[in-house]
Image: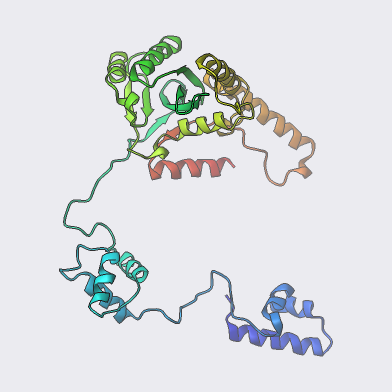
Length: 354
């Protein structure tokens, strides 16, 4: 980064060269700067300090090291050691002491690593669900329930959706007039029969709702040999595949503008949606093949054919391709609530493929 004195010297040299008859852009090229840079430096007829975010800027009102140490010392007093800055600052003000603003207290304590749980009581611990990964269909399912409005205000229908997160295929669904674990258990038993699911084959992930942890559902999971997995309380991000599927459903152009008249009308519409989603929708997360194609193992051949087509197109007109053809490799592994290392490995894999 060029300092302000150096910029002043460069502008002086360019001005002298221009006065002597040289063009400004030639002088800039000789000095290794762009003409637009020179114009920015001369903005408003005078040189300005560097306004880029990457500049090394020290605020004029920055606390001194002694003042920062004083804040930490006060925060560690016995009377304040268990309190957050929002409690410390008013109490100090009542004593006629002002050291810094509340936000400054937070900033200084955060930098010192003292902003975490400050009370004597044990900090609350909420364990993240164990990470899951799937490399083939019928290994990890995700399911949830969403409301469907009816013509009677305050009365809803309940849509149960089960999906395979590897293929994104909706493997089971139903619309009921009530929300219960018994209804979900019936759908799950039907899915295992149609998909040929054996004991200890799949893991079923859901949130912490009543139907998900009801006695009928848990008994069915145990009887079928299905391993349950649950989200953290009130954390929708732990069940992202079902949440994303519901958004796709509700944002379809064909989604009825008016509430459903009855359960038959709702089932008819959902049936059409599931047919479109499974057999016609080219899903962006699985390289734009349909969930049904990926679930049946047809995506590998389809993507290989696309790759060959692109390679042939590049061979005919190589001048139209700057680097390489589009990556049509199949997605090999799908993660649910992955660890940070899993995310990094996935990102590196995608970067290498690109």
